[in-house]
Image (cartoon, rainbow, N blue to C red; front, side, top):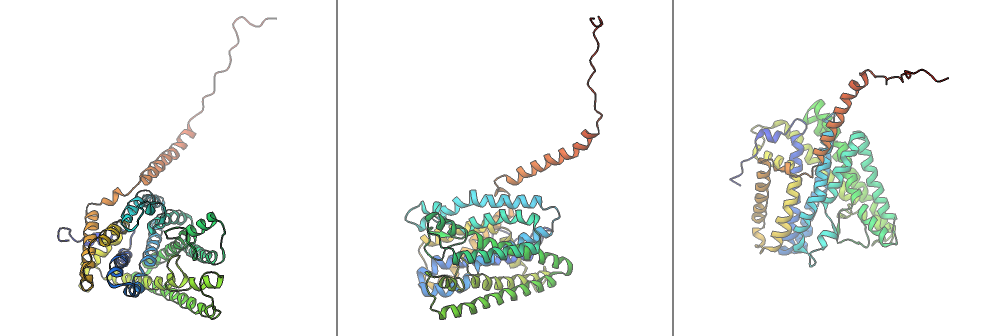
Amino acid sequence: MTDTPAPSVAAARGTTDRIQAIDVARGVAMLMVFLSHFSLHYVYSVAGPGWFKAQSLVTHIATPAFVLVSGIMLGLLRASRSDFARMRDKLIDRGLFLLIVGRPFIALAHIALEDDWRLPFVDQVFITDTLGVCLILGSLIATSVGDRGRLRLGLGILVSSWALDIFWMPDSWGGSLVKELLFGRLRGESLLYNFPLLPWFGWYLAGSGLGSIVARARTAGGGKIAARGVFKAAAVSLGIAFAARLAAWPLKLTHAVGTATAAGRAVRMLALGQKLPPGVTFLFFYGAIALLGVGVVLEWGERLPSEETPAVAWRWLAMLGRNSLLAFVLQFYVYYTAVHLLPKPPLWLGPVYFAVTVALLLALVGLCDRYRLNRMFTVGFARWAARRRETRNVGRALAPAFAAMPTIDPPKDQPRSGGSLG
């Protein structure tokens, strides 16, 4: 990493419509994604399922934190712009890029894991696929729905998704597939691997509403006031998680086990480790920890740059957060291909091995950030939408001029020279 200079303080601060501390929080969430996937392909093989399960209690925070903080970033961008159209188009473009270009690249990195190379392309729904749809739908909804409206709508989508997952058990293959893609399935999966759309989209959308509220609080009172609001949200989230765990106890007393009954499925949905589909306790417990981290970095962000703040690490984390979607794609090749296929060092070298993989990823992402290669991650939608918007604006500007032009009456018919025949 010596050849890649650390991002500058100016770059770390970001543009005027970004809160740099949120980039830092997303960078920390990205590091947890690295650790989660390193644990899956190294710790599980070297140390066994016991160690892996214990470490999962920590690494399970990765996906809830990343999706929530990405939603908060959408809310920040929405709150900072009166004209959201251009940013909306960029977010839609990025979502389309993940679905059209990113998906086959990620599927390619999964080939080493499967006996049939076609399975990653046709039988798996990656979290990046779900995030791509979240970016598109979230930016469209943010255009017309306010911050508290998005927060309520996101929570409503979550509750509806959990209810349908528990009580709707379709008999047909088509209905089962639709349920699995939209809500997830607690019993009898059709796909090899799946991040269902609606629960994660509800979580993302709720985060976008919270992000707008945080951005306005920061504008009014600074980072400490915004952090105070985030800490309150973390306390509410933690309270919901504990209430969900308490609600599972009476169901367990009725011997509701397995997924054959609605009560058994409800118990599963209230379990801490219920990730796919994401359960109530899982999302709100790890979401509370993520919000505590966001609050901490919002408060620390007031000190940048200063002697008390580890500015170099702060800037690297902000850079990683700004380029998190690129990092998400690259890390699949590091962990799902390289770490999976290469010989694995002994467990006592595991921390060094993980540090090397992180250094490699930071170097690659840092080079892309330095040369602004993110501009290449587009399918052209944002440029097309900008040209279309300019054409419309020109037409609207010229319309009054055309309306003010005098009209010219057509010439009247002239009588013939010979007079009329009697």
